Image (tube, rainbow, N blue to C red; front, side):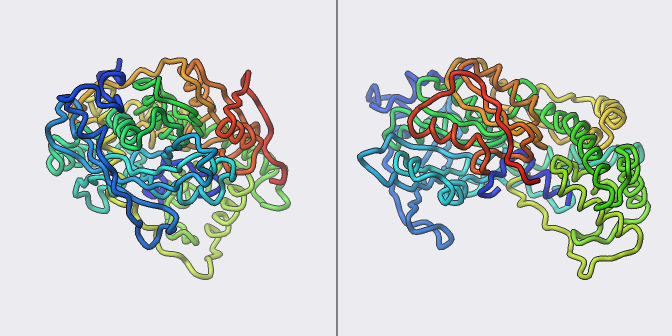
Length: 495
């Protein structure tokens, strides 16, 4: 259960699913610039569109393009990037291309436009070719593999003094296995290089600019693209934004910080509904009931519809507390299970995430920010102890040791996001993966941005969920109407 949540920790779930080193003006000119430009073989390559697989609607076409593994050595080793396309339905109204990224890092992206196509307004589909792509190292784009076993995929680990040495060995082993399996390729699977790949896609499609919709980690990828290629960014919609300042280890820690007020809010809501849920008549009683369940489950795992759950499994499901009604019903069922009422048909443990997604998550996040992760295991021990006390639900999970502690240095330093390119940021007030504070920090870094906050909005992913933010995003994508100021609107009622 913990593994499945962590695999998609920065993947957006909409209602439908859910100091630059290369100068853009000289490196990615669509016209080719000069005959001996080593990037010309990429920027002017011809894409051979074909039917996709049987799972993809026939209206979509697929292609593969080449990019350099190392942009400092464009004549060297190459990677494949898988892309798909749904052409704009009105050639006369067509504005350009709209690229999509679902987040991650580590999440494949070919499926996002396929799923969202049913939810997008006709006005958007008339004006844009919808373009999906699997980022380098992910899915069908020269996929990574670290050769990790099922146990090694368990990324979400609570801190205990008695198991910390084992966690350190796990983190070191995973880092070493990834390095051994992928070698020099690993250090080039980064956000900056994925942004460069996006610009190769732009050039190969013959476009002067791209528009972009992305969620979660994809907002950071979009911000990096805007930083590297400010003149190439057209209409960018960033949904559920990552904090570009704390990206890396701080991303996990922000999740822990944001969970505690959500947990308190949930306990207040549930106490007012004691008759329905029988969890306590005061917020303190509700919280006490929950922690009693955790203690019992740590002594003896609880049989539930989700399989056997320990107390740590229950704590790691902290994202559910951002949805008050859902969380109350879930905890009420856990309470019944600890009292001996078993579900009629216990389900098996959920499947582990694909190994490629975990390898991709580690490669990108560790590679992007390798210099910022402490190298001393004792620092992680101290931080986990501290944060378990500060943020009891998830603090120790967030601050415990990760393979990034032993990761080899990435090919570049992290990107500083600081520009005035236009972008529209959409954010729920109660987002379990990228808290409101994260989106506000992205907004500050993108000085040309406007932010739409959905007050009382719950969940990770805004666009397409039927909130007041949809109208603003649709107007921006279709007409270019950009809010004159930040906006706050309210989530739909009926919770």
